Image 1: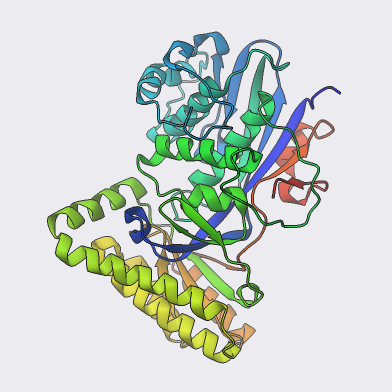
Image 2: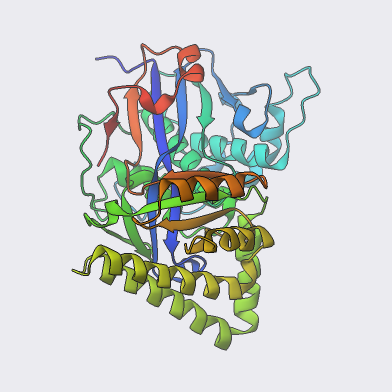
Length: 423
């Protein structure tokens, strides 16, 4: 049976409920996939030996193009098939350095004076880093064209880079013959992260390498949530499912302040603070972990819905204030908290802070009229709001041989039927 001529892949964004920044130091964080907020990629087969990357979401008006033969394969000592987690997953800094000038050469054929900014260069570096590591001369594909669309805001703390990394890792593993489209139906299944033969775990490990290209020292939680979906607790590379019927009853308002910030810089600044004042910062991180532990306890308890909401609101306030003390707050976050507090709602920064997004718990007793008033107050000052639930599907794939590029670019991609899920 011949392989598809096109693959469509989709990965969700994520939101951290509790444990921001502490997770980088091995503490427990709670995170979940976002319903309806996803990145999608279409991989098209080529026969001319070129790689093409289209990034209109990042402001790149024209595609980047590289010959496969130009990639520095000599910098890849050996490529693991992923069945042995001890091989093939050490980050290859030498390869990344060798790719830097090649990334810029992808724009050489454009005669439109298009410049590639830093963010676009990083996105291209991830693509070439993964392809160079995974390239398999046995594949029937002699090159690929990648089209990217997304309704995830970039740089807002919602895991846009992880969704991008997971989509690229999945698509290239499919294109290069390392994995195949699963036969599983639409049902969400439990996963076993210790199963080294699992295609999902292979995707997650390569996506983590991609995240290192982008962030340097990521925690691994973003790519894990984008890969597996659902809701998880995460610490020191160990992930645990949170399957609770009560989790699905929680509603949130997610507000994007549209305040630009750099996750890598914010994480680095907390590291400086930690190293300078370890006896002060370490107890803060321990307290943040205690909040995650408390959430796991109460979400599976038998308390009433009213008490559950009240306890979560208390944890929201505690988590926000502790993380804020690490110097990652911003006036835009304070404004969201001020507006939602007028309606007795509780909000916290989510992600790295410094702007980005704010998460607000919507209790059952909050009226639709009040929610509309809150949204109006927030959008009137330039913020973007949407209601969401947490815990949907992770990476999803589709044989897109019958889907044209035009259909992909003009459609709401997640509405295509026939999606398959690895877990």
